[in-house]
Length: 174
Ligand code: AMP
Image (tube, rainbow, N blue to C red; front, side, top):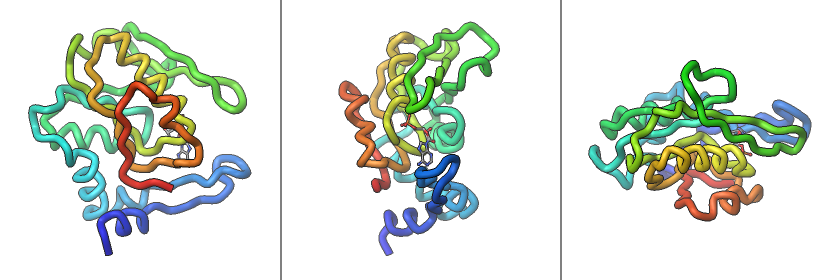
């Protein structure tokens, strides 16, 4: 079996979670299997060597898991993009629309030095609203965004179209 097939076998589909009509991609079976977890991180960091990336920015909450593990492997720092109201210091905030209502994400104003080479990491790219808001936050900090990388991309939701000026890479697509 190829690496991609192995990983895909580790993703569990949960129908109608958290609401009817949503097929939730559950990545916990990948995390609990050391070989699959390592494989996922290997593929996320594949284009890079230690020294290529200054900061990995992970998106709340599953982006923290993959992002932090990737940061360790690349000798990079880790910065969280969190849901509004969770970060204790001064923040920049960015809101984006959901099907019903809106969400706001935040980053510490001093999280990243201007010009730092940054990799944005999350578990899944769906409509792209979350990642696009994170990209806006990174531009406020004058980060040099190398790439946004996702373990999973739901192609049919066309999230890439919200990330036009960003290089986007996904490991698994559906
Ligand atoms: P979006 O802003 O629509 O691209 O949604 C991306 C965020 O929502 C990511 O942080 C994902 O973890 C989560 N998400 C959206 N859709 C799903 C799904 N079908 N399965 C698992 N997580 C999802």
